[in-house]
Image 1 (cartoon, rainbow, N blue to C red):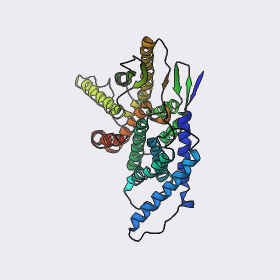
Image 2 (cartoon, rainbow, N blue to C red):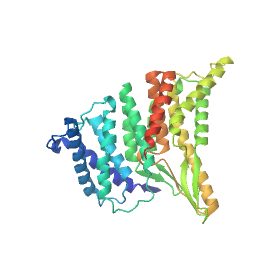
Image 3 (cartoon, rainbow, N blue to C red):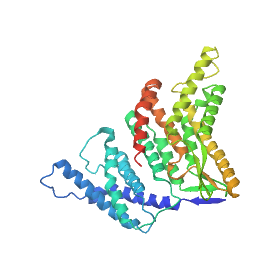
Image 4 (cartoon, one colour):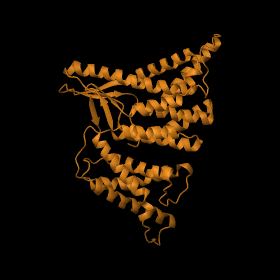
Length: 376
């Protein structure tokens, strides 16, 4: 048995824990600066927040300076963003932020005030060298935006997703480990991912026809199979091949639930018109959760099968075997994000219904996620 431990990412996680704790207990040592007469009260409060966060960042930076290599400003920004976000929404640590923007207050606070401490952290570590084979920052940011969208949507709709969040937290902790053989490793975050899918699917599988189950499972497999591709980089000069992994469209996770829903709806419509409506169960809020199980099953299966294809390509050109990992560290891999995309769509249609919810999802939620993920 082979065990892989993501040591670098785990060390970043330790830095994240420290930044979270120092903000969480900031009320003990939060420094209120003397007011600058020429500035308004609001600007004085904002200045207080910025100065305190810079001090916190200096403390965390020096504590973790020897802990890990590299200087990745984007990842430090994500660390401080989540520290501020979680403290605000789950522990009500507001840092005396003077504006009230409704449910977006904590997000705006985190978006803007994660900048100073992350820059300070980067400046302190400017002599550190480049880190290779680390999870790309843009992938982590994509995961961040989608999880934040899900949490905010849960708050807005009043629909509790406690089980999902606990499962995701356990999955995050487990994601630092992968086990398997020298050829194929499985990231342990997949375990709670499957448990979440089973929980949300519930008894739905018993309330739809067998043909409906086969339809949704078949659609899911075809969608994942066609969207996932093995990717390599070929040096045109030397002919050297570098395997990238199994990839799919950056925004596939947003399109997935809509694709499956539309196909299900029209197939049922066709069966109704040919007087075989009893064979395909109608798409309703009660039957939609059937999608959860095939999402995790076939995203995982397609990832594995495409990974074997990648291995064949590399072996053909180099004569060497390559190892692959199903799943990834930090819940930022495509498998978890596919599940998050389905959850976001599910909450939307529960709140607004299928038609209005789908329009709201396509016109408002998805474009905002796409725009925010461009900032990497």
